[in-house]
Image (cartoon, rainbow, N blue to C red; front, side, top):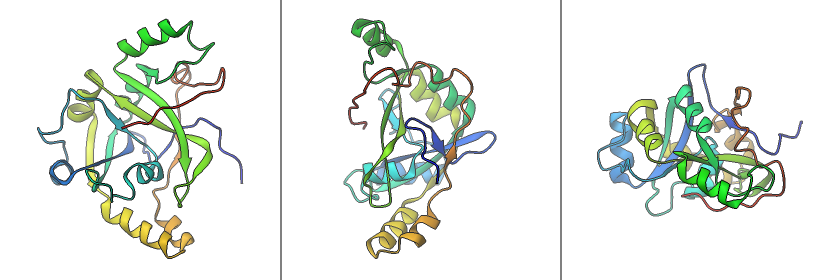
Length: 209
């Protein structure tokens, strides 16, 4: 089995859409899944983090058991929107050689409507793996576009999360693995990630929300 690159976007995607995951309290998550769009209570002026990795979302929300994250959503969004966010994103931490200096990075981060960080991918036990998973933070224009323009469909995948978790707890890992979304390397256009790949030196990450 080949070893994945350390930084690579892997996602469930089609020719026109890519699926990302979020988790919310029922007051937000249930209406979003029912109506296929985020309700008015969803704050469009706040930064929101989307995760293409199902297992990283499970790590973040504790299989949908953490308070305030009981409803796990699979949000299918337009690929052109996803790529717009990446093209206009800044890296969430400073990297010497990629940025001129810390002040340059801070200015870039302040201007950008999106930010990227790379966190360790997770296995079925939610243990960290050696390669990284993309977390994409959306704020301002990006957050509004995500909610009102890019979203194609929203599904409640909480039952799937609970089913997989149950199989893992019983040690039935092969069965659990077969239920996972089939995430494949995302076909990144040339140059799209040039400003958000921390490849010049060692990196550190800070937790996403």
